[in-house]
Image (cartoon, rainbow, N blue to C red; front, side, top):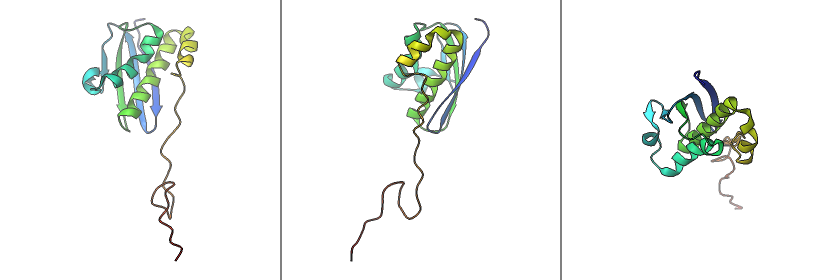
Length: 129
């Protein structure tokens, strides 16, 4: 595989554009090294999970452009984008990815604030008299 494969992942308000090419396992996020962008080991492992499920760690170079949201949303978007890109390289991975819940787009997002309330569901204190 010499050509690059692109895919998009989204979660909450985050969007991640993922491009994979065959290589040595170098991951770049917003032109920064992967371990510098996500400082904690937990976040790094979440990003690497699709490669571990597919048994192809250190086989692809990954370039990621992500924007919007916070750290958790960006990790989820990146994870979905990588899974979709790897699926284009090998369609037989679909069952493994489904089993690990890597192909499901998490549709949960912040609920909008309602008029006459301080937040989406919270109400102002009720006073009977």
